[in-house]
Image 1 (cartoon, one colour):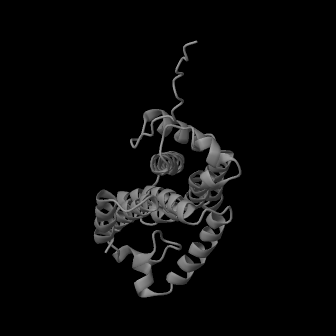
Image 2 (cartoon, helix red, strand yellow):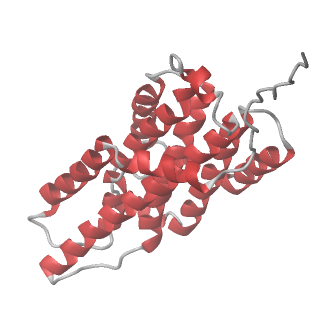
Image 3 (spheres, helix red, strand yellow):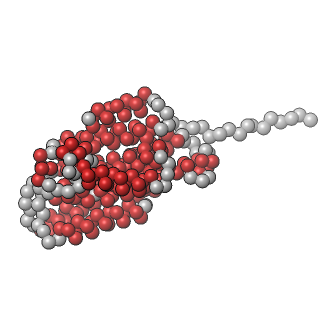
Length: 255
C-alpha cells in the first residue's frame, strides 16, 4: 500500500503593507461609533448655547471653536487607544494570529483611519457651526484666521495618533480616559505660563495675547507632533530606519 503525502498546513502569509480593506474596516468602525457622534452633537450644542445671543466676531470665533473641538479630539483619543490595544484582550491574540497582517500593519491602519475620520468629523462640525452662524446673523465683525481652524483639525488628528501610541505602549482600558484628564489639567495650568502657552496644542481660553501667536507656525507644530507620535506608535513594533527618521523629522518640525 502506497502512502499518500498530504499537503502540510501553512499559516497565512504575513503582509507588511497596509491594505485598503483593513483601512476601510478601521475607518468604518470609528465612523459608526456612537461616542464620536455624541461628542460632535455636544460640540454643536455648546457652541449654540454660548453664541446664540451674540453676533459673530471672527477675531475670536475660530479660536473658541477650535477650543470646543477638543471634545471631539478627546473622544477620538480614547477610541483610537481602544482600537490599538485590542490585541491584548482576552482571546484576540489567538484570533488575530490567523489574520494575514502583522501587528505593525494593524497599528498603522488604526492610526491612519482614526486620524482621517476624526479630522474629517471635526472639520465637518466646525464648518457647519460657522456656516450657520454666518448665515443666521448676516453681520460679521473681525477677520477669520483659517490657520486656527486648521489647528482644530490637526489637534484631532494628533489626538488620534497619540491615542494609538498610548494604546500600544500602555494597553489598558483606563489609559485613554486617564490621559484625557491629565492632559486637560496640564493644559489649564499651562494657560497661566508664558512658555506653556506655546506648547499647548489648543487654546483653552480666548485672551487678547493669543492674537500675537503665529497661528500658521502653530498648525505646522501640530503636524510635526502628529508625525512624531505616529512614529512612536510604530516603534513599539521594533526599531526601523524609516520609523526613526519619521520620529526625528516630526520632532525637528515641532521644535
